Image (cartoon, rainbow, N blue to C red; front, side, top):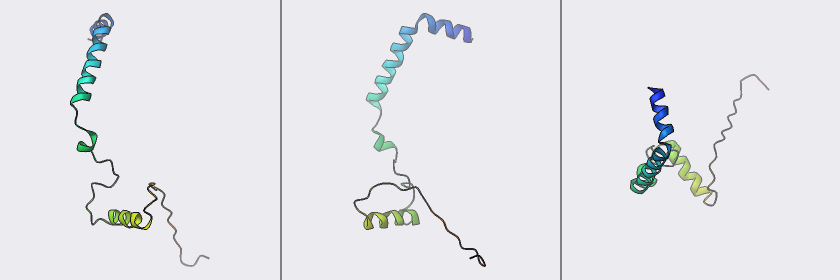
Length: 83
């Protein structure tokens, strides 16, 4: 089976290439815009009353000019009886 497939592609590589490029062109022209299909935001699937969404809203209110995303979390824990 793979020998037949390899031989077919080797003989008609130009036709296969044109077919793939034509398919790509058709898909690019007929596909809906990305914004209509997917949500690009990290927590867009969460409801508005989720703590993460509320925290993001408060952060944007406190720092309206800072639109950078921060993915760093520092967690400190004090153990009883230690220093």
